[in-house]
Image 1: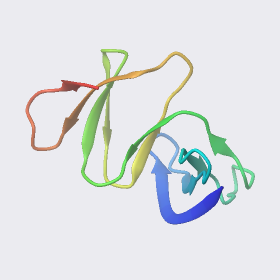
Image 2: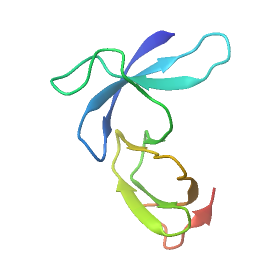
Image 3: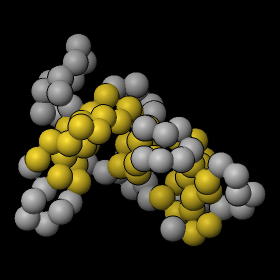
Image 4: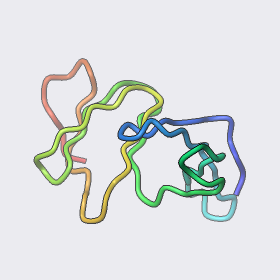
Length: 95
């Protein structure tokens, strides 16, 4: 895993995680550098990341989560992002 300079904030808890890239399969992971609540190396298993522009996402066709630039949503067990909508758009689009 190679640590990047990009740090993202969990929209639910406010905890910060560093983005890591796996060289062999080019997957991405969010791993904590450590905080008062989290041990160093704590990894987020499933997430939806807002890297550039604010976005709203629908979880399981119903729950709406708004993400600002630099935030991510930590998906819980059984949750799936089904739709997304960028700030200036009026309608959600299927993912």
